[in-house]
Image 1 (spheres, rainbow, N blue to C red):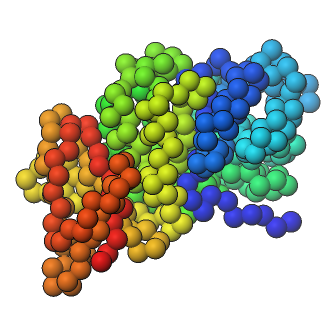
Image 2: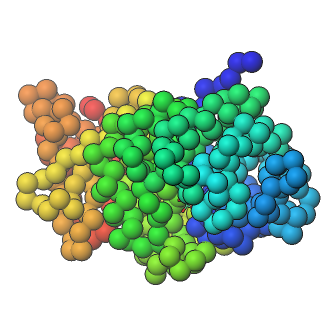
Image 3: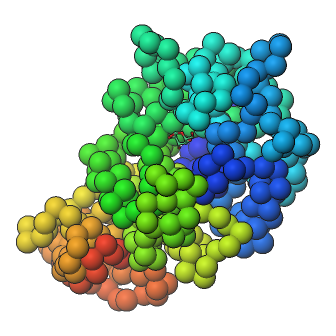
Length: 381
Ligand code: GLA
């Protein structure tokens, strides 16, 4: 059987964990699907609807199979999967490479092939595969290889989302396991410090992410405003400007864009961030070029520019101020490869305001608010 090449670009969708943790059920997932469709999220590219941990019974059945919790999913996973597919979405589920999931439900250790077949039967298109309760002396490489092999031979095209948290130098070997994305950090929290720590921790790992295997910096907290599913996730929330910067970072760093807020109640500001087509186009650019970082000598390391070369010759130029005071950010086009001697300039299109701001030569400077970002799509002219 021929298998489709999946995840040429980072996947986009929604995941239940950040807001709902264990409080998931069929009605919630259906309402989420309906809301995503109505608000234009599907059309914008958010196609995977992923049910995270806590969906099953606490024990396997007598045949060793995973069983969906009938209290939460009274019509079973296949019926829910059909509903999700009828609405035009793809269906994602969750398991773990250890004996138990992180929340204590059965994991897939030594059940990899049967579970992969079960997921295929339910019509699953995406499996998030966590890293808890690994038996001693089992290294991550072999455990992720097992599920990689099982999914690739399950008879269905299933995206393999390795949730490995960035331990064991995962970026160096995860591509070889068949994974299409790999979590590279600990769990995100709905706070500015968490966003900042995650982004800065991945700056030197950009070269390891690319088509068919993307660095997953975790689900978005955009729009959560402190409504996390547990205290650890809730963490006080962020301002809309911080959420905008968070989104811009995940876009520029080619992370999957998995929404983590309650999409049934989106504010206008949240919609504006999540539905920004100009930013999504940068994240979904077919070549998935790693961004490079430019620091300006006068600024602290918290103030920098990321530049990403796009497949049509344009460049995404993003100015970030992760610091706590406003800062001037200066980009010298020399660092991008556009010298004064070339006679070339850059035509700047503002991806947040959606307008052209004109042609600039040699240098671009702008004051960026603290915790703020500006993203431009530039054409060489
Ligand atoms: C781990 C993962 C999270 C989430 C929880 C579920 O912490 O990193 O993303 O899936 O498990 O228990």
